[in-house]
Amino acid sequence: MAKIPKTPSEIFGEFTDDFKRIFETDLTAIILYGSGAKGDYVHKKSDINFMIVLTEPGIHNLFLTFDVLKKWRKRAVSTPLFLTKEYIESSLDSFPLEFWEMKKFHQIVYGDDVLKKIEISRSDLRLQCEREVKGKLLHLQQNFLNSEKKPHRLRALLVLSIPTFGTLFNALLYLKNEVSPNSRKEIFVNTAGVFGLDQQVFETILKLRYENLKLKSDALLKLTQSYIEEIRKLSQFADKL
Image (cartoon, rainbow, N blue to C red):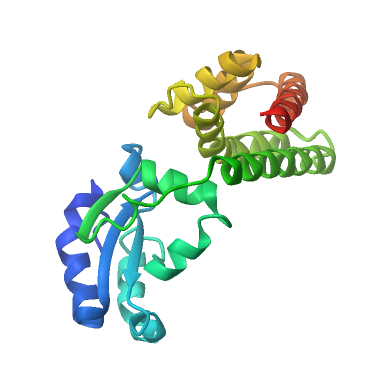
């Protein structure tokens, strides 16, 4: 049975060897990102995320990776992002939020640190933050109405949506020239303080997600309504940044 690593670093050597064997000189870099790079990796709960940077010829040979990817999925490794330097450089204005987070939280496993020198436009980042928060607001509203007030649906809406705001909140703090913390809780607490949101709403949802807090149906309904209102406020701030 495949062994899931207790820390991502346990597999760096074997993982690198597998992809060096496949791509040889077309392998430019392997970079860890996501929870493993942030220090939030939880054994048997978190996935391990890698970016694999290839040359332009190498990116056309992804069909060679089917077997090795199947092997690593059994060890909690998500299908890596396969990119080229050219793709990264030409996509910074399309995905500024994603690349901003990767630049902030990443670890070089092999090769060149292709993220170190990238520059993210603040205007591009602000625009995507506004688009993301407004899109997530619509998503929350739709799923709230689709829940039919059923407690299990409300709880699922809360615990599944809260992690998606971590990167967004961190970027909004950066755009306000505030300290961008590493701790999950600090990100939400600081964002609430800077933008005048109800800190208790986010702390309660984090406890639902990570501490298995139990709430009765009326409390879940009220919490979801408050959550939507706080995100609505945040969307207005994002528009004015």
